Image (cartoon, helix red, strand yellow):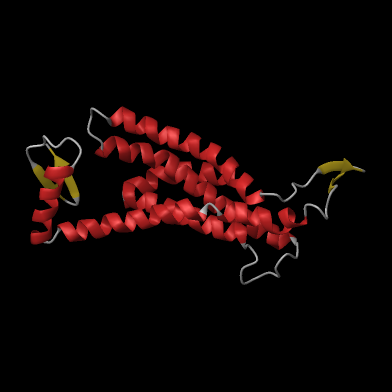
Length: 212
């Protein structure tokens, strides 16, 4: 279901980027990540009994997974686009490479996160019995099958929430810079402490700060 969402997100990424802008599209992707994490953790919210399996509950769970997949499709297409548009030409390729590295590194890190969540609890052992997959150690793996997998899904909310917070801070910074006294001191800070302090001019244009 998440892969279906990825296809949908990739197909819609051009529409979102062109009509809503790159940053706003990435913000929407972050919201989808966050909703997917919370929904996958507690898909029974409002409509179903906790822990009681049903076909409707399976549909709800897959709906939240599709939401997360749409976020992946949007972010994977729009992130390189946004980086290529705002990055200086001399480091543009490097930043796009770092974006790809972050994706692959994140896929690795999530295995360690799930390992830490599992801790000393047993992993379920699944085997085929009379043509049906069954858990062979249900008592030992009770915590994992009832609670552990939910925590693994909701861990996605941490980076998603951090991304949304940083997006909000960036907008607050832009509002701060629009005030002339604050803008003057912020420009002074950039000239004094920013990367490549040899810049001779700081230009503020439509929310973007250019160093030359």
